[in-house]
Structure formats: C-alpha cells, structure tokens
Amino acid sequence: EADYELTAIRMIAKIPTIAAMSYKYSIGQPFIYPDNALDFTENFLHMMFATPCEKYKVNPIIKNALNKIFILHADHEQNASTSTVRIAGSSGANPFACVSTGIASLWGPAHGGANEAVINM
Image (tube, rainbow, N blue to C red):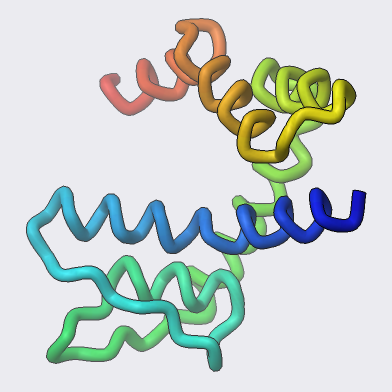
C-alpha cells in the first residue's frame, strides 16, 4: 500500500516534466530540466518557456491562475477518466496500469474528445 502511494506521488510529480518535454519537442526546442528550487507551478512554467540561453521569469499572475486551473482539474470529481482510474485502483492494480486506463478513457469523444473539439473551434 505504501509503495503504491509513493509511486502515485512520483507519477504525479513527473507529469509536468513529461508535458513540458512533449511541448519543447513539438516546437523543436531542447528540453529544459526541472529546477528543484521552484515550486510545482513555477517549475512547469520554467520547463515550458525557458531556453538554454534565457531563464524564464515567472509572472505571479500567470502562476496564480495556473495554480487555480491545476486545482480545478484535480478536483474534477467523477468524470470518465477519474472513475476509470478509481475502479482499476480498487482492484489493487499497479498505479501505472490504473493511470493508463484513465488515459485510454480520454480517447472517447464524450470526454477527451470534447476538449479537442474546443481547441478546434
């Protein structure tokens, strides 16, 4: 049980790094490593917008807004992906397998597809 909790914490901590790495790759820029002196949101913004030649100065208004967005997404209650992860987790499945089921549920047009439709508007 304790190992699964630690695994979940580590997995959540790596999500901003993976997202920033994907973004940097998509725009042809080099990956920026996390800075342990920064908090969660500052680090995410740093990895997204810093370059090897220029450090990113975090705007406190953007940081505050992004913190609120992260909280809203984390507290999204029982959407399809959350429910899927919780159901898989209740079986005692490995945390990586559980998160994979949640990601798979985003594939449908009624959940993740809705977000994609908004972007394409």
